[in-house]
Length: 623
Image 1 (cartoon, rainbow, N blue to C red):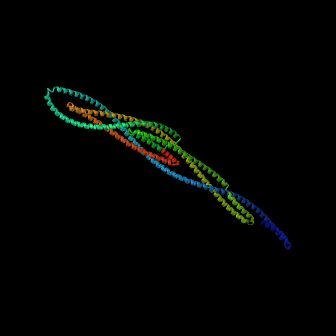
Image 2: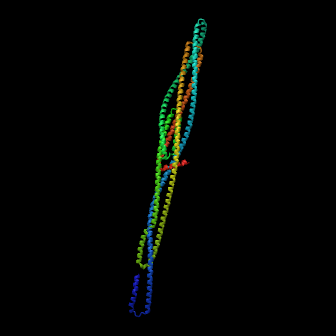
């Protein structure tokens, strides 16, 4: 347009000059006015050119600024979009992690509830076992009372034995007196034979009276002989039963002696094994995690029950109970070693897992820090898209330059474009604000992760404190086990003493039985003497002899009755102790089953659940 105007302005004077000859009548005034108009037009044209140059400079400057802003905004937009995609993926990964953690938390809560229920059951069982242990202690006291009664009965038997010795001596003295009487009777016979001729008449009368008395005495003797035969048969049967029982007791004595020797050998071997196991336990305590308190309590109850079995059982079955106790102690020690190894492995696994989790969280923190740095860099360089838009606008501006005719329209368009750019810049600012909000959310998440790390560290500290407390409890329990071993050895020595006492009692009973045999033989000899006296017709002193024999037989019967009562009471005690032993063995079997179930549940549970178990045990110990 400017070129056309300049051409038109250059051409106009020539036209005027050319038209001047054709119009000679034009006046000079018109020429002057025309020149003035031309000068004014030139001035206006010059001002127009200057204004146009200034406007073009301003437009170029604004276009350059807008281009720079567009390039910056495109870069920021690209960075913000890439950052948004990255954070969206990060949010998805975190959501997956949150879902997995919620599922793990639910499973752990279920396991905790199961373990709480099992712990309640085990506590109920432990209380039941405590009650049974108290009952066993009461029974033990009753058994000790029975032992005291047996010792008193033993003393009574010794006193009766002394009395029987004294009675035997009196019987020997009476036999000597009877022999003297027989000698006197023979002398009297000789005297009667000498004086038969002188006093036959008197003797015949006396003989008639004597025959009558003899018939009466024979009748009495027959009745008494029948009674004596019956008593002798009863005594023979009793002696036979006593002999059979003595033989049985002797066989039992031999068996007990053999078992004692075997038990002593086994005790020596097991004491050596126990010393080795104690050394192994002391070495394992320094590098392993302690046993659960529940299992130690149950083991204490097992040892107490074994001790009670050893004290309650009879003299013949106590040695076998000691064998079982030692075998069970060896099994318990092996179980303790296995549990210690398992717990150490679990503790190491839990340590490794916790260290891995801490390292992963540290890596996550480093990644988040690097992400924050990249976000800051991307915010600085997020104007790539804006540069493209600015390039398009430059093309539009070039088209505007080519269209200089519509400067006003172009200016209006540029104003509209500026408004659009302002809107886009506002949108970019909003996107940057959204990105900043996302960055703040990420910082909040990092803080949450740090809090979780702190919680994990606190849990680790608590687990270590629980480990220390459990180690202290384990040391206490080992000391208790040592004390119980010493008590076991003392009880075994007491059992050996009781065995020796029982052997002495058996010897005393055999001596009493021999004395009874001798007394029965003496009674038989007395009966034969009485029969011989009846055959010879000797009637003097028969009343006194029969009365003394009856007294002696009554005493013997009383002694036999006492012995029978003692034997029946001893048999009843033995049966009662056998029944108690069977009941206690059943209870021990139930306890072993419960222990195996508890171990199986502990093995089936994972390391996280075992960590929870340790925490629960710590809470229980503190309570």
